[in-house]
Image (cartoon, rainbow, N blue to C red; front, side, top):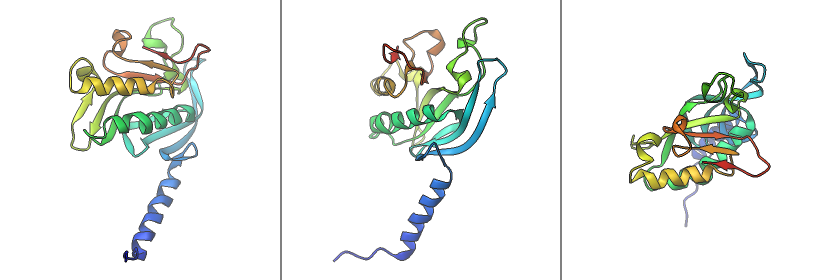
Length: 194
């Protein structure tokens, strides 16, 4: 005969869920943070209409609060849940994403005269590493070209292609040698992944 669940445990679970629901954004309890509202930009094409500041995604903390739109937060959640967590399951679990960059009103690769980056529209995030529960850090820069991290990093990079419209990694150019650039720009020909 199974034991009855203590009433105190039931209340603890309900309280935790209520607390998570209170700090969730974008209509998903797995996306934790706060609504920021309109974020104006210094350049005309910059800014985010309904920005959110994300602190954790699918139970994985971000190394710093990151500002983006809900479309990007939802894509990030899907990627973490379907690709990052399963890939590092044996090694991890993953407890933190190291954020290299999020919203910043700037041009692409900070080049003068270039088009405004997706970062400037709140539709991009750069991830430079993954922190495991035991404190191990899987760095994109160090792990991309050597084992045992290489296979796992390539798998999560490929897994981002779909939820995100543009996925750039160390093989794309020297600007992205130490991180994954993930943005939600959409193209008629499908996702652009390099």
